[in-house]
Image (cartoon, rainbow, N blue to C red; front, side, top):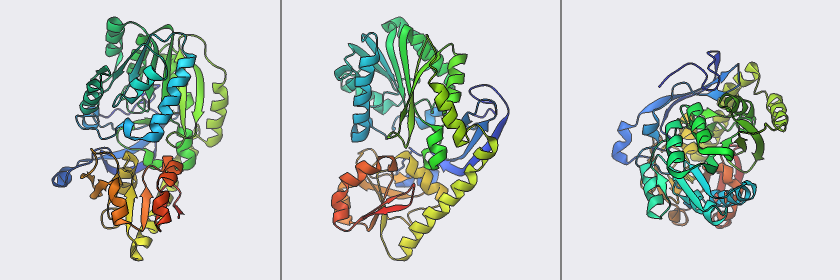
Length: 406
């Protein structure tokens, strides 16, 4: 699906600022016999001069990305569970009423449970397009609608269940091909005093720290506060608050919206974004050179270790690791294998890179010399969990900075 117009403001004045090459579906781990059938897509990002929105224009059909066998489960990620526990407590305090909440992209139902148990909401339902995840949640008694959310579904839920006091969309607003339609659906769900909470990876964090492996097919967009404010206004909503979350996804923002007043605190975020160069074309165009330099540094490190006879593997297999490996042209030739805790990933292969995912339990038996930490955004948690590995002589690599621990 291709449309060379900005998804926020409709402007055709888009400029290419980053091309990461041809990429497979980052979350689409495959069996060995499926490797030859892997399809790749161009991963190219454009910047809108009118509203500063950072976006892909060639969008992979979301049914291919969020199908029957989506491999990320929130419940197996302790830092994520703790984060959503805190969020549930915060929203429980902020909400004027706690009768009804809706979670969009509710995954395996972890957030639904927490909004009930910690947030104190009487009724909570989820909307989750991945069939396996929706099934897992419903089997636990957590009401989950297995559909893609849009304005039409928002109206239907409001009609069947009533207006929601809170509608939450965590780490999903980057995945929506039509963000205005999605936001209008959220607006349909809330009453005059209802609250919308959207958490997204912040473009400022990505650009400042060159977090290019956070980009992949399903991340159609990366949001800044200015673009968020622009689309909210076009939908008749107001940004009532913005919180910076430094520990989430390498730096995220949680934007609160409603039908009442617009917060003046967002002006401070505008200044931060402008200072980072997010509103300047020439500054944004520098991303490509910086990305190529980061690539060269990481490739030199990994190939250098391989040349020394060291065994290099990967620990944790988030979607970002597929982007990093394929952008860098690294494969099973340089990296022995990967390890993960998620059952749905074990025994499968990272697409194109052709790297087998083993159970995390096998690390001690294999004892590779180096482990690349795929989920570098949880690096501190990783160092604590893998202290035993480092104590036994292993070393951890942060692929974002190329720093080595141990």
